Length: 125
Image (cartoon, rainbow, N blue to C red; front, side, top):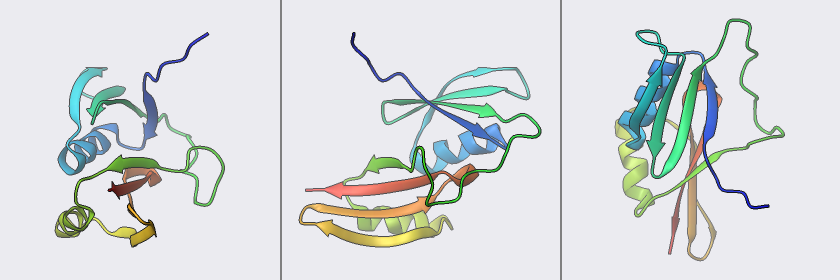
C-alpha cells in the first residue's frame, strides 16, 4: 500500500480572509471554490501544497494554543530568511520568534497566520 500527499485541510473563522492572507502574504494561488458568494471551501496551491480552507461552522472550538498535540506548524522554505522577515515586518505581521540558527545550515523563524496557525519559515544551505 502506498500513500501520496494530497492536501492540508484548515478550518477558519473567515475562510475568505484566511485565503486572502495566504495569497497576499505567502503567494498562494486560488485553484477553486465551493459555495458561491459565501464560499464553504476555498482551495489554494501554496508552493505545490494543496490547501483547503473551510468555513468553520458556528460552535467550532477555538484553535489550540501551543504547545499542543497534533499538527504543530506549517513549514515553508525560503531563499533569504532575513529578507523574508523584513517583508513580513513591513506588512505588519509580527513574528512569534525571531530568527534562530538551529544548526549550521539551518535558520528558522515563526509567525502566526489566521486562526492560530503557526507558520515556520526556514532557510537551508
